Image 1 (cartoon, rainbow, N blue to C red):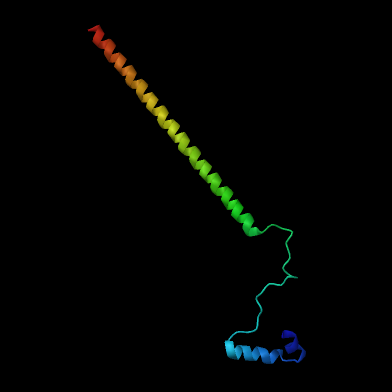
Image 2 (cartoon, helix red, strand yellow; image 1 turned 90 degrees about the vertical axis):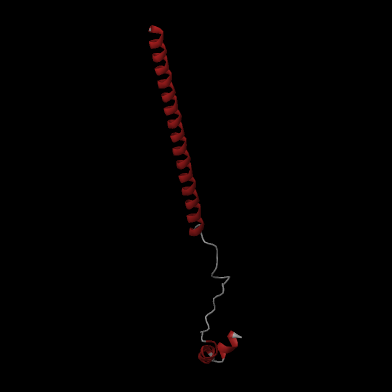
Length: 99
């Protein structure tokens, strides 16, 4: 139909009527099989999503590492406290035996 309109020089009249009837111009928003070919480059959105996923995984790994180190430090502090208490108990026992 577009070819018939173009061949008869009715493009301007069609556009005026479309604006009058619908309030919109005659822009075609579909895809063109000739113009829509595969790109040689990767999709930037896919690349960005993959990078974000990698960064989130890396952040999660860092948080896990920090939590593990904190746990190890807490365990070491408990061992130190236990050794100190044991030494104090030995000191008290040796003091009581001397009397």
